[in-house]
Image 1 (cartoon, rainbow, N blue to C red):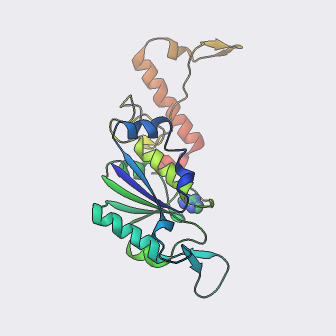
Image 2 (image 1 turned 180 degrees about the vertical axis):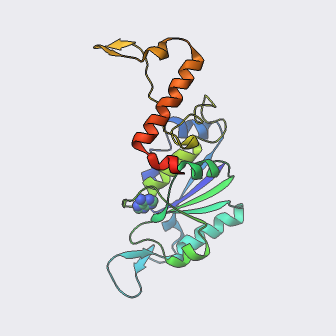
Image 3 (image 1 turned 30 degrees about the vertical axis):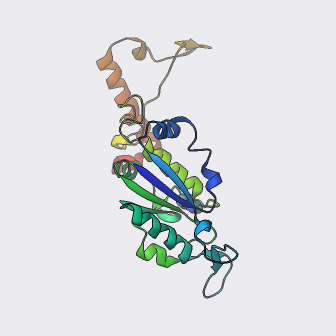
Length: 225
Ligand code: ADE
């Protein structure tokens, strides 16, 4: 997979992509993540990338020209499956969308700033608008990092244990059951007996029951789906 991230602050994304699973996925050649600075595509003599909004009002709007120039340059090089815009008024990200996107070949992720981007980009070029939650970040970069992490770990071959993504919370609309490791007792706090029993059918039954109970208590909305 290839992911092209369009941003005004590429340095904000150096950290998240240079450690752990995202780094390993790139080292293994399973994903190529490229950052592009929108400012490099400004033809304005001051390298401006934003302007006042028509109709007046506080806050600047990201201009159409540099963003379209960058998108069209990339589209000449390859075909993109989705052109995603990170925005608080997009559809809230869920695991099923991550599953779907993890199977794509080429993605563009556009990060917004200020009051947002000129609406004509959304109308004519964007194919998906994603929010990572009902709150407003200073820009789309951290949201793009969240989306990239959530989908790259699902690309076949990225996780060491192929089955571990299948048992994540939200796969099958259930939260994960509780987990424990050694020691079996700490300050009198005990690991549930069944997990130490070696009886794997019983352990599996216990995990299913706990996953269901946890979902009923914490996220009953998942069961309605
Ligand atoms: N940009 C600013 N806030 C955002 C959010 N909650 N999700 C996605 N992009 C954003």
